[in-house]
Length: 273
Ligand SMILES: NC(=O)c1ccc[n+]([C@@H]2O[C@H](COP(=O)([O-])OP(=O)(O)OC[C@H]3O[C@@H](n4cnc5c(N)ncnc54)[C@H](O)[C@@H]3O)[C@@H](O)[C@H]2O)c1
Image 1 (cartoon, protein in one colour):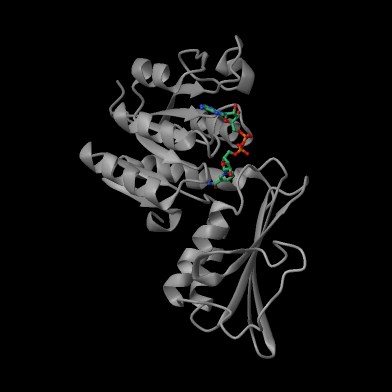
Image 2 (cartoon, protein in one colour):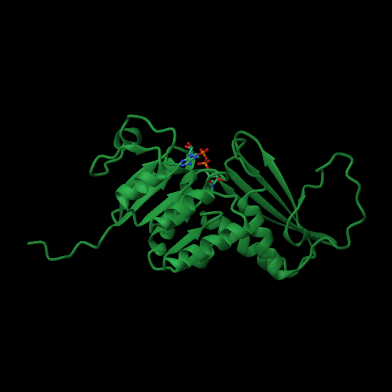
């Protein structure tokens, strides 16, 4: 007779499951013995089953859902992972919380005010959730190192490089990096000469702490970022490259599992490592 009691699986749904990130998440959830794939939502749904589309072995056999609300009401997942787009992510997140489901949000573009609203809604329901601008451990370390280096350099700029299907600019990672660097130093580039842009935007966007952020969009890139810090006679460059979307998946699985023990919103993977 089986003596060990099987640990309860976490029921996880994926919103945006047919997208570039969503399809990796579906496979990750389906392959993790601690997780149970509860639903896959995408407006570009088809009659094909989830199992057939992804070549996974989820039981029972799942169909795609076009409506997040329908899936939430029917399946009542513990956690829903969202990789959709900046236009829909806030409404999706609020729908998850309303349904008593913990959001794990990878989609970028949420504003500071929206993050506050999400946190309040989670607390009102005694639920936890995460918004993670970058699930790659190397990117989290890049941000941490940039925050540390920002104590010692008065001048810094960020170049982020992504594929040309990315909807928002600058990237959530670049914004989060600049926010962390602002905790080390309030303002960068104070001794720069007065500037005239011959072409508008040539100096990039002025982000948190006046850090200039430059967004490059080209086919061929996935997600890359350089934080360049300068002082007289020296340059420090901190660079991270995501070469494959697999690099985000251990972070996603960790966030899903940790979300079960949280109350309120956690913003950034570094808080749960
Ligand atoms: N946090 C991270 O580590 C990380 C890493 C890579 C990408 N991203 C972000 O993730 C998001 C998705 O990126 P992607 O490359 O997978 O995009 P994608 O365009 O390939 O996929 C988005 C998917 O969402 C679906 N979708 C659109 N509206 C929807 C809705 N209302 N409900 C359900 N599904 C919906 C689309 O049909 C599509 O299949 C972007 O915001 C991107 O910046 C985050």
